[in-house]
Amino acid sequence: MLSARPVVQKLQEYHPPLGGRSGLRFDFNENTVGCSPRVLQCLTQLTAEELARYPERQPVEALTAKHLGVPEEQLLLTNGVDEAIHLLCEAYLEPQDEVLIVSPTFSMYEIYAAATGAHAVRVQCDADFRFPLSKVLGAITPATRLIAIASPNNPTGTVAAKEELLAIAKAAPDAAVLVDEAYYEFHGETVIHAIEATPNLFVARTFSKAYGLAGLRVGLLCGPAEQMHAVRRISSPYNVNAVALAVLPAALEDKEYVEAYASQVAQGRERLARELLELGIQYWPSQANFLLLKIGGPHREFVSAIRQRGILVRDRSADPGCDGCVRITIGSKAQTGLLITAVKEVFAALDLKARVTA
Image (cartoon, rainbow, N blue to C red):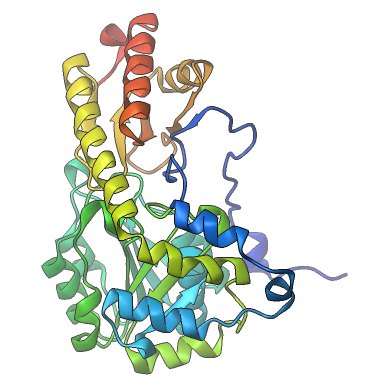
């Protein structure tokens, strides 16, 4: 009887809670107001003939590389950051290799690594979710072949300094070091221009967050040209669909739209942080488009009560070190106002001041 490889049968499936997502969607860190109007206009101009052709990725890759200020041979457009992670795992991992993952973080690093038979080594964040540089350096072994670091990290919003990331790449020359910059637009710091001088450094970006293109599934992977030649060998030539390729130039051109949205998010993040401080709810400073809150024991009640008020938030209590934590995406100015009102109402209704644990 046909059966999947044993390692695949043991994989933990990723089940995003996508059902019934009505109301304000502050649970998936998406752009909460949508893509640029220029993108929508571009969509209306697509023809039946364009959709009947296989997508041509290279011209849009060249444009994207120019936009980022990197050589074209360093950049590959991907089906979201997920595919970028998958390609790196397939390109560099053998069974029994080790993959270092700073925990808690995006679960797909471990899932894609495990699918190759590699062994994931979790390095727990320091207190207050600070980046654990010394622990990561101490965990590098001759078997380390991939180190995956999200900065800003999900679900914590914390960052690793550029110097820390480059120190790790230098300490592990035989490992691919992936810096996942999915939330770059909300933070503004990058290591992408260090790739030229760092032969094992890769950077992933997505257009699902600030750009509002999550439904089109488009991201990118940058790395040293020599290494990207190897990655391209295992990439499908048609991995990014024609619709995404058609609208990406318009999205990139509307820099003002993305910057204005990111600015609203930053202001909303600070506004929500002030309100949480006043309410006595613990949170962690974030450089992404969300905040992680410590609700404690009544975290499920909190999520449910907020949902009853038409707002979806994400329970992250199952993540390592996140017991009792809830993650809330930040949206526009008006949406942040609605969120704060709902949080205050739930806080009072559940008597959280007396029930929130440290």
